[in-house]
Image (cartoon, rainbow, N blue to C red; front, side, top):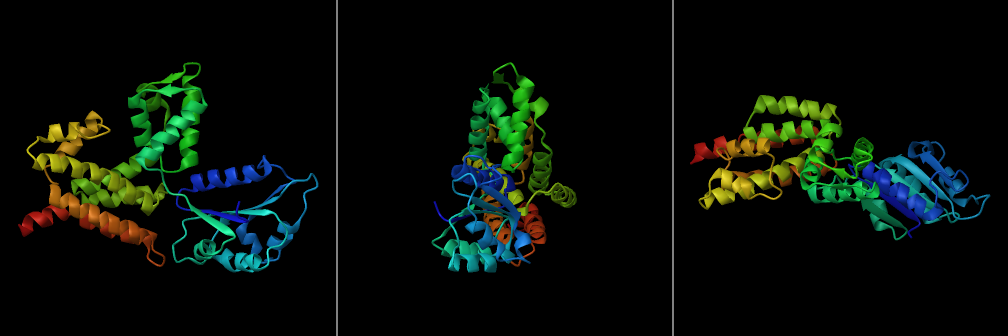
Length: 327
């Protein structure tokens, strides 16, 4: 194992989950007060030597110690660089950070040092979310119907710990029954994050600029990240693009939508059918290209990600109308 492990990214729940697993791998118990010391990374600003001091400490009960740093940012880079130049003791250093840019000082240092591993933690894709759902429910001794799994994948938020907490709540709700049906998932799993994301995506697809402004404001108030919103839009426009291709081959919108995997719920299918009247293959192709550009912009250091996202989605929302005028 590397001397220092850095976990960073927009999914802070996944950052915490992986950091905790790393600490547990060393100590067996992340709450062991003799072998684990937790520090806010900002606390080292006024006392940089404390990192070396803690790393050199010996556990009273034996075994390797862990220095667990929380809420790290680029301001930790010079302190960590000094430590790596002359690493004291043998304690493992586990660091949790936010969504670090590629050119950020802490990430660049971590990725260039042989003593450090850097692991990005990004919001779950639909496929990843299905795996998380299956693993978590299986841990509770539960199985679930395909409709329930599909609903959960669509309505759980992007944060891994929040998703697991929602699934734990679902397990308590269905106990002592060992199988989860769609009605159980709908009755227990909160979907406020999914709703705010969905409002942004649908307003963009519908070309509703006023609705898009409102949805973005709500999503940001709910704590949604610009990267997470871009990825939700990418998932939707990939499906819209697949359906548009089938329509271009002569299938009806209903047939094209029915062929999507996983199949959408009826409410979503009706809305997709309406959107296919606006979006053809050319328009969805351009939308996907602009969303890919938006994802890069929202991850770039020095660019305000929220205004960049708002501009990109506004341009995308008006694409079908502008392309129609150009023809």
